[in-house]
Length: 428
Image (tube, rainbow, N blue to C red; front, side):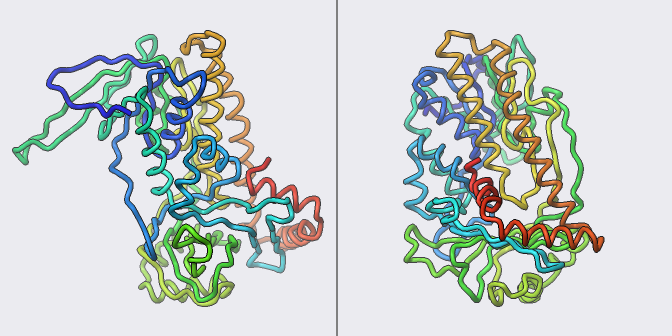
């Protein structure tokens, strides 16, 4: 990977694919294209404004974690970085325990039910991004515009982004801004939920607030998590404890650290954020029915307002949206990043297909096929998650009885439970 060096004159550079955003989704796409048999000779640019991801170790964890499905794991295996990730630390989970706070309904999923070695892994975001960025260093076909941001967009047929890098000058009151024009056959917006490129391209979204705020932290529990994911549904929002692992080996882990995602009504979230750490831990343990005993400590808490967002169109001429730039989803199932990784797998496959057949990357059919496949799947996932959220928020006695009865019924029906376990593990 060639890191772009600042020059004194403006430049116009041409590429086959320009990826805006080098987070997990954007970096994965870059690595897939640079390592693909049909796409390895493409000229690829990556533009990213973010700083280097932090390194966490021991009892200190990244507050942002992902629940990677088996499908996502396979993507990283194909990129030959899975061993790098797991050599540092990644916590496999073998079971999921989900229950309703307003009744007796519960479901337990186990990896052995679907003859799998695990249901997935809980991994810190920064760890995955570091592994991906290290992998990108191997590819000479990549140009990395580090600490650059999108300033302007010129639509097709120019299909150009003007990016700028702002650096502090010796005069603290002034900054030197260096702009570069990047022209590509395909522009990919992988720059997150508040995508600048999507905004400049005028691609509209349908969005609404959930009225919930996710409180995210790392907690230490009295009882071991036993490599299980735990989720309690309440009328005011779900509480999830996701297992964490301090080292690369399961044997080295004391199994008392979990990533917390408490998706609470925003009014409740404000009250919870105002509590002292000790009072918050006490409240959390009570609300979680002491399923993992008391909560002994919590790291810094982060409050993230939750909003559903879905692009009306994932594409326009010469441009595609991927990951959070195209869709954001309620975190109750932990599927957000997985959906983004599935996006780039399909987009990379379509680009490879065009290269193999000698079709120019500007051919509109390429991006249309990508949109057709991914939009249908993502909408289905979003509708399902919205249905779950509304179902467990309902307080009507008949609905409460139906959902508890339904959960218990599914838990007793092996075939249905296996099917849902495969969905949870990303095998379907």
